[in-house]
Length: 225
Image (cartoon, rainbow, N blue to C red; front, top):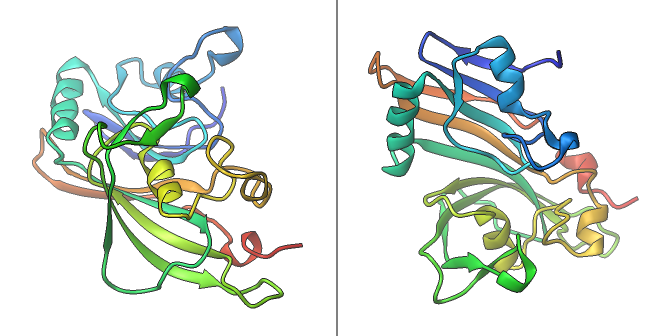
């Protein structure tokens, strides 16, 4: 059985660290049956999915143990009582500062190009907080070429972080769906990682803040060969 990176386990819930390239739930076709939920259920037969990450995104995934806990945690997500934080490395210069900035851009499906999403005034309200941790000036012309960000989605739209960052001119490196050929070539994978989950345990009422650092090597990933 493939290894599972276990971050937290108790009688009621699990937090697992999903690798990039692994589905959260089974897809269509026999080649898409290996997924995080299937791996978890082989070890914890009562494990149930609460939320998902994109296949290309790595990071923390919360799973319930039993249907009652799945409902309780699902309600916490729906009512925005779960704190989510991501790390990303994006193309271009973004100011390094202590304050958080907000991207407020409604999103909807780009129907002719599914599964792509797009910014559209007719879309659903979508909010993302971001803060740059560092920037790199490794290009020969001295221009900053990439930034390491913390991201907090205040809504949970499909591809929200990827589309929001693209909309302000800073696509995530390695993004095969939304990035240009250059952006895709600068990283071997999508450099987006769900690094933190915070919530009140529905049974114990304990405040949990679970972390799984991305391990992104910013200096290596932002240097042009």
